[in-house]
Image (cartoon, rainbow, N blue to C red; front, side, top):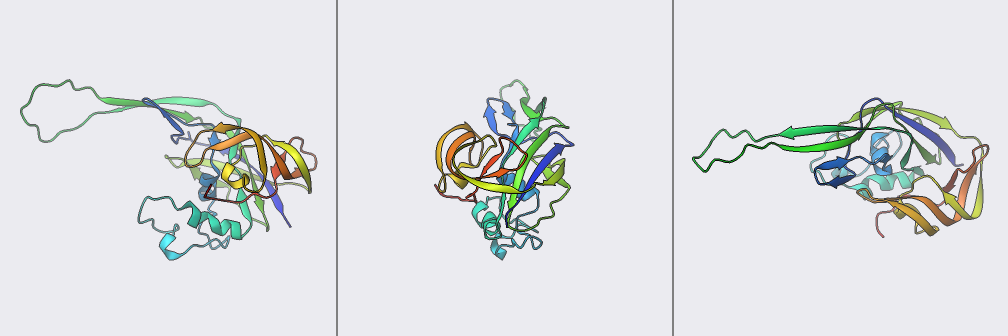
Length: 235
């Protein structure tokens, strides 16, 4: 039996991660990658959700190297029938922070005088009280955390979970307005058209017109989520 949870996420701190770099401007796109949500929700390498990984890929206690291991970490979620969609903004605003720094040299050699101009940059962050929405599809009941942390600054966010009512499966050409990870749907559905959201590690797509099976929830118009969707890592 498939369960669908609609989750709303409200930021209590400003959220920052570098979606794109434009010169000295580091911009945060108002969309949250589904990989990031899996880690933030504690679904990765968890005894609670039966998603533990091999010891050499352990994520719970210590990461010996800063190398992403998405395939090793997220494949157990496929095995448990757990999938998290990316999160879109329902209501957000941005703030612009300027930072600067200069070098502190404790040993100075006599050389030609140079200007002491500090380096600087600007970070465009998502402001507190911004609200996002994402969905969790699961083969069994889940108890998701109320509070999570996201982004480079480990920003605090509150999660509100709603168990959606009965849904049905339809088939045909449909439009999914919610953002999707293209790797997770393109091998099991015929993707016809879409808009690209450039962001690492895998660019997302939205306003996707596609052919295949989709979930349609009673009482919620325009919500259509692909049925055959799971984490994939090779194109």
